[in-house]
Image (cartoon, rainbow, N blue to C red; front, side, top):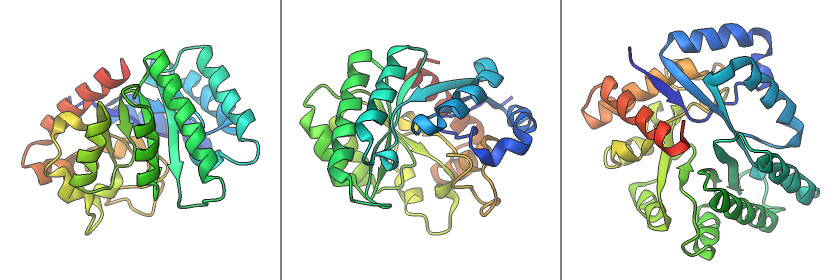
Length: 257
């Protein structure tokens, strides 16, 4: 059987409240052997941990403060994430990063929160899950400031050019997370995927968001990973089995699964 890992799924979102157990069962039936739940902030902490507990070993968790949750109380939220990390049990620090799309009001605070969490990941030898939206230069500025103390990790929802990918690689041991956007008509990232080695790619859904074709417009879930893998296989001229085998191996190695 083909085996997939969804390296980024918010299956604890309220969008799954009505049929959570049925969704998890369906995901497993479609060859998904592992999902990683990235954190958002303190308000979603209980939902995340409770949902993960229901799934047992099928789910691993990450912990961090999402950039869109950096606001006036950012110090308290950051400390909450750091305290949770100190208790252990997480496979990554994330989802962290910088988001200039929704608001630039706290962009400097986002950079500071990002930097602190990168340093924490490096100290704990944990990979990071990086959210970068309309903030590529700011992300690189923070990575630059760390010198050689940059943790390994993944750029979540990568949709950039091959040149951006090359810049990412200059800063450290990073993979790119490819999701439903690659299936969209005229998606620029499909061109980039043609040149990015499979050894540098992990699959993700960002469920319930960024649903791939042919389900675009509906709630996303991890069972749709096969459509993402199929598109990558088409672009790279290989089989879905090859994409699954390589990306699943990448995920297990990166997150120590």
